[in-house]
Image 1 (cartoon, rainbow, N blue to C red):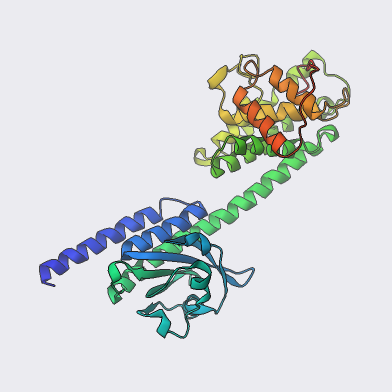
Image 2 (tube, rainbow, N blue to C red):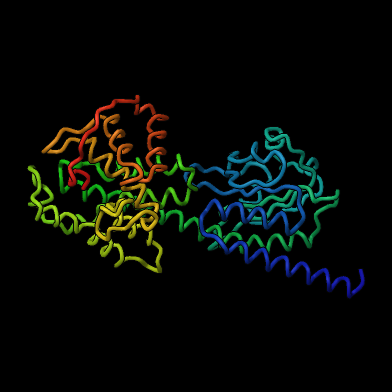
Amino acid sequence: MGKAEESTYKETELLSLLEAFKHLNSNIEINEVFQNIILQMVNLVDAEAGTLWVVNDEEQMIEASAVYGSNSSNIINIKLKLNEGIVGKVISSSEPHLIENVMEDASWATRVDQQSGFTTKSMMTVPLIAKEKVIGALQLLNKKNNLLFTRDDLKLSVLLANQAALALHNSQIYDELARMNLNVIRTLAKVLDARDPYTSGHSERVAKYSRWIAENMEMDAKAIEELYKAALLHDIGKIGIPDEILRKTSRLTNEEYNVIKTHPIIGAEILSEINSKGKITSLIETAKFHHERLDGSGYPDRLVGDEIPIFAKIVGVADTFDAMTTDRPYHKGLSFEEGINELERCKNTLFDEHIVHSFIRSLEERKHLKRKCTKSIEVQPNESV
């Protein structure tokens, strides 16, 4: 290779590496980070396949967390002992390893090939090191076109692995914080429900119903998780409602009901105070608009149709259903069949038809609904608060 060709080759390598760096830092969700890392790595060195192994400290195992290539579905979630195979050797030593022929290496663990049906010939394995700790390893298998991995390939892989380790480390921290955040939200929802013994568990049930609806509507996993959090906190504004009204065991007067109707605005104001960089806008909208109705008869802003955010529409259906089907001091809860009949009676006027039908399907799938009574129940306006 002449100097000009070598310069062009090095420039292409550098551009490929910079492009890989950019993609690695484009996401924070851990599953997306897993897939990004493995995809960028196999593209960079032109490998047939690759596996991202992550150390599971709790189980003291190494787990295949992302896979690319043929028979990948047979490899994902395979677990190895910390010192097992070449990947275990690399994680233990923190040193990269290049093998031209795995059959000649005593460290090669054949059971992964046996389980997956893939035939490994050559391999590069590089450690993922973040904050001076090995958190996993990347394996690249079989360079394409029957070529062999080179020392230059190994150097490129190590450079990308260093960046990948930081992306993975940051994502793991984010994932842990997200789990902690959800636990805090659940605890807050339980504290809110505890103020009124007659609505105990209401927020959890509304969140559960909302998730079922979203799953039936085939929303993506990220949106479903966001909806679940929004539903848990939909009634956070009731913090600002006096106990003598919130815990009243008889029917509310018109004046008291008007006080109750302020809780969506209070909730939106509370959540707005902690809305760092606009990251919880959907939670704010859900808290504020879950009592809006398609025909404009809801509150606080009398929104109509598509003016109502989709999360608020879903939580509105789940919230109303739970209010109708649980016992309150002033009425006995309806059966699930009666509650669904009410939602169907009010679809396209108060509630979105698609959401109502998604809820019905989700209840039928879980054997919670036997369908169907014909009695129509008039719902009092304050029974869904």
